[in-house]
Image (tube, rainbow, N blue to C red; front, top):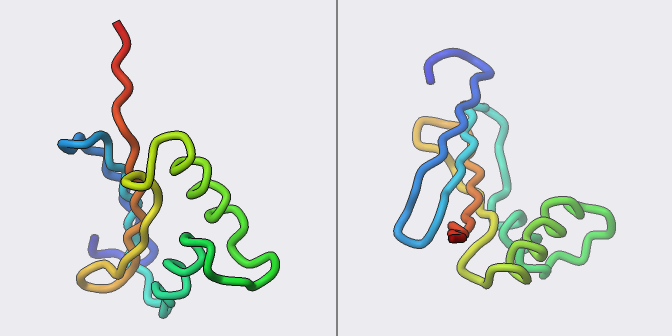
Amino acid sequence: MGEDGEIAVIASMTESGVEIRVEDNGYKETDYEAIARLLEGDDGSAGAGYGIRNVQQRIRLQFGAEYGLSYRARKGGGTVARIALPVKREL
């Protein structure tokens, strides 16, 4: 990613399922610790991040604690949002 305002969506198979990553090259500071607290349900801020917390809880209830959302800094600037899901194989 070399241009301003770019995003990339990458999907790949892993040993435990499917990983979908959305990466941007943004310049804005992001508080990844606050996001992690929010995803774990430890942030009591009313109305803050309700959507991602809801998605996280639903994924974990359905598939288990090893699946869900995570966020981290992208090497070179920006953010990586990751969702991990199992592969459901039906015959």
